[in-house]
Image (cartoon, rainbow, N blue to C red; front, side, top):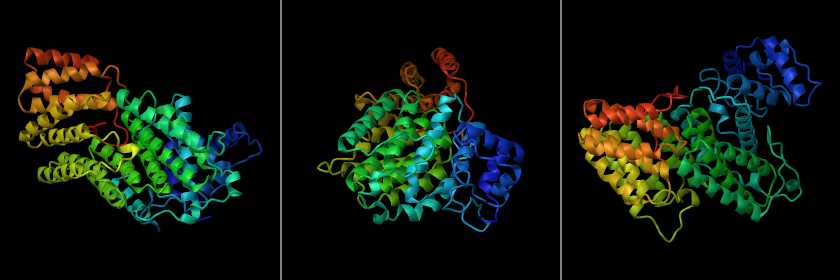
Length: 501
C-alpha cells in the first residue's frame, strides 16, 4: 500500500459519479457474474483503494476495469486505474513523482497483458453497442517525455531468453483472452497474410467495416504471446502484433475513436520494440503524430515526430525517413511555417530518391510509394495555402502527379487527393476545376467508411462559400449538404485538417 491517494482511480471514480458504497455493491455483483461469487467488498475497502493507494487482489482490478469501461463508454484498463501491482499508483506532477500517461512505458512482461486487456475491453464495447466517449489524449510532449529513454534502449535480452520448460506455460494475459496455444512458423505466416488482407481492405474501404475483426485478431495474438516461443518465432509474433495494433489504431482514428486510436499506437510501439524492430516503433508513433495534426494539434505532432525519428534507430531505410519527414512537414504547414515546411519536404524528396532498391522495404512500408510522397506534398502545400495562397499552385501540381499514379485500388488515398486538388483550386480562384474534383471525391465516398474523408470534405466545403453565387457551386454545396453525415463532436481533441491514408 502506498498510503497515498490513487489519483487515476480517484479521477475516473469522479467521472463515473458513483458513491463508494454503490461501487462496492457493483464490484460484488460483477465479480459474481464473472465467476467469483465469494468476493465481498465494502465501502471501507473502496475508500482504501482510492484514498490510500491500496491495490486489491485479483480479480478486483479486472472487475473494476469492466465496470468503468461500461460506465464511461470507453476502454478503461487496469493501467488506467493505477492498479498494476508492480508499479506505483498514478500520481500527478508535483505530487511526488513523474506522471506517466497510462503507465507508459510499461514493463516488457506486461505488454502482452496490456494488449489483451485493452482489446478485450474494446471488443466488449463493440458487443454491447456502446459508443466510445470523449477522453483527453495524452499530449505529445507528455508521451515523448515518458517514452524517450525507453525507446532509445534495446529490450533486455534476458527477458526474451527461450526456456523450453517455461514455454509450456502461458502467463496470464489479462481480460477476455482467447484460449490460444503455442504456434509454429506456418501459423505465423497465416497471421502475416491476414495483416495484408486487413491492410488492403482498410486502404480501399476505410476502417469502419473491419475494425472489430482486426481488434479480435490482435486479441488472439496477445493470447499467443502469453506463451514463450523460440526467439525467432516470438520476434515474428511481436511483429504481427505491432502491425495489427497500428491497423487497429488507424481504423479507430478513421472512425473518430481518438483516445482508443492513440492507445493502440502506443501498444504498437511497445510490441515493435519487444520484437527488436525500432523503425516499426517509430512509424507507429508517427501515426499518433498524424492523428494530432488531424485534430488541430500540430505542436503535439512535432513533439511525437521528434521521438519517432530519433527512436527509429540507425537501421531505418531512407524511404521510411522520407515518410517521417512528410508528416513533420504537414505539421509545420499547419502552423503556417512555410520555410520550414519546404526545407523538410526537400529532405523527404532527397531521401526518397536515395532509397536502396536492393534492400526490400518492410511490409509496413509497401504502401508508401511515389504517389504517396506526392500526395503528402500536395496535402502540405494545400494546408500551407491557408496561410500563403500562392502555395495552392504547388498543391495542385503534386495532387495531379499523385492522382496520375493512383492505380492500386487504394480508394481512400485517391479521395484525399481529389479533395486536396479541389481545395487548392478554390484557393487559387479556379472554381470550375474545383467543382470537377470535388464531384469526383463525392461520388467515390459513398462506398467508403472513413469518417476522415467526410472531415476533409467539410474542410473543402468551407472554401465553397466564396463562390456560392456560381450556379454549379451552389448546386455542389447543396449536394454536399445532403451527403454529409451529421457532424460529430470531436473526440479527444480539436478540429483540423485530416490525415491522408
